[in-house]
Length: 162
Ligand code: ZN
View 1 (tube, helix red, strand yellow):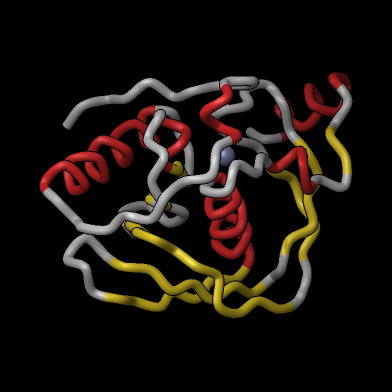
View 2 (cartoon, protein in one colour):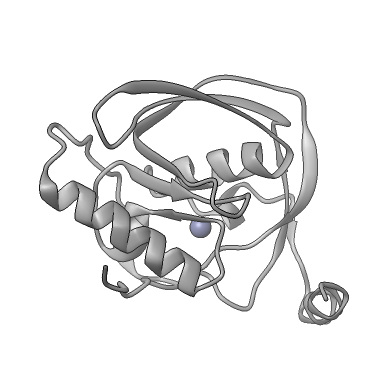
């Protein structure tokens, strides 16, 4: 496995719409492995293709330790409820926003064997599905945030985090 470079801030690749994966190849599987390693190394809970410069509809998520979700061509097929909470992004370091998302999300995606699977998430996982799938269409969370924290609020938030 190899650690990949995470694109940041105003990198134009983060704003592009990704294409579907037509065929799962050995390269796709290597990418999934590398994305997981990269995300873990950066202490993230989700990572999408464009964040590592790959304009393909691929996402890895690990909200619960060792419960890794690998999503190829993910689509939100159902959502309900609402939650408002803090959100950050490995591509936008040093910032946090307050974002309202659905509290329940159902996602359809292919797994690494090409089998279609359906995942349901509430709370953080639902938030993560929305955030990561947004990346595949060039959407970053500040675009949909209720508001961004001020520098002062951000510092307080970071201190209260541990
Ligand atoms: Zn992100």
